[in-house]
Image (cartoon, rainbow, N blue to C red; front, side, top):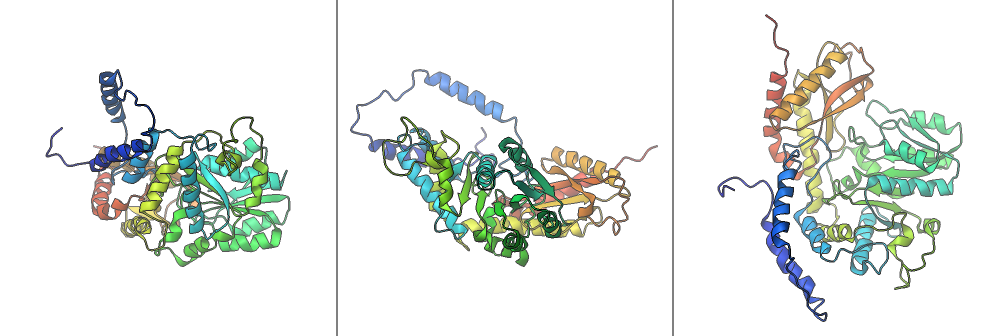
Length: 461
């Protein structure tokens, strides 16, 4: 490797891992020694280099030029703490398998719950948002058996899939032109009865839209359903101060919902997979009760396996999250929130450039750090084809965006004089969720400009 080449992958923090391993090892000095050098050390190194070679067949998820899907590098302390824990390889099911890491999970989950204003709660980490939402809807189904689950048409597709797995009826509710659950349409469906749960999406994966939680809470008081907040993507944004007032109000009132899902492996700087499910009423733990003939006898304390549908779970994920929160606590105005603020500011600045560029068509301003835009053309079908060409040209320049199919109602086609010959339009999408994105906006814009110029149809002779 050329020593003068610019650094891409952060490696300076690796120096501290050896010291931490010695600190860990000192806690077990009363045991007989073990041979610590693997007999196949040469093979290990050769295999590891082969793995590194294979991993080069990836998009540069760690780089600011990757702005497509919701991928954010773990914080160095999370990577190192996760690796450190692997020398123990704890299992956060029963305390027998992960005494220290189970305690760290409880402390980390309590800090997340505290971010929402919950001093009492029931919760734990999961393998990701899908499993966390499954547990939330499973509890909802236990409390209201046979009742229907409602979520917006822009809610994550797993809610419909999970409902089917759980044997629950599911119905989508239309969205407004902002991509948020339409409170009027919801009220009309609630009036028909037989609804047990409504899912509020706090940051949709397509556009980053936040459902109008105050309106949903008003409807909850009127109709008496259970309200679950899927904040897998946007849950941490309550810590920032540059949200729109109406969006900020939804975050302030998250403490009033019945359950919350958040994914630390999205904005929480964690490796995959690390999700979290929280219940405001700890009494729902009664639905998890089960007997184990061998697992739960080492302590009379609560074992995490007694409040989780998953059994074996990586204690390393809890250790990594605990370490990150130790370094970057979840406090408004703190360094962690500043990272989110920068990502949102990057999205706002990028939106302003798009809005004033005659080649592009924008909808409403982003609520979080995701933004979508269309490419102008005379017809929606042509605009969709142009978007796909811009996407491909951007990728050739190492700018990696995403494509998303959205209802044409999200855009003012009349003002853009665009014929709606399709019900949906293919748009470009970016998730500017890395703290570095704000400093790279000029470079990102320059590449998008080049991609737009080079994607124009070539004139025929």
